[in-house]
Image (cartoon, rainbow, N blue to C red; front, side, top):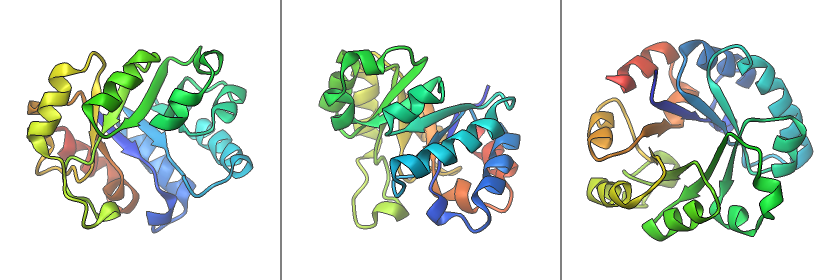
Length: 197
């Protein structure tokens, strides 16, 4: 099974977004986090409903982002939240998801996410990345320390590429998350295969 996770950003997509999602589904990464931060709740609902249809029979896990009510109303199995929103959400709203994740940037963040029942966390940014230009990467030693002390799987994010993915795994990351390359690559299948090596 793949350990590669796609994080979406339709703003970076050079073609129709749903066509790109179909190509991603065919490339069979482990999961897709549908992270469209620019959308309001109603727009996100419509996009997520259509995306769920694309991924339904693909074997790829689709994880919705930010809007708890949308995820619950669509019967989504996965939900990913900014840490602050996770910690402020009523426990009853977080129940029933097979996968519950949070965006973390420190070991303390991870411990807080664990305390409310997250099944995984994303941790970044590991390397400098185009979407956060000028923000220095936290590095592999930081990743290694967090992975060693975390009780849930850590999914590394930020500047991960085929050239450094093996180092990220060696530092303890359970999965590698990639955004820009998934949105822009002319051959998504080749991208996944190169990240899996």
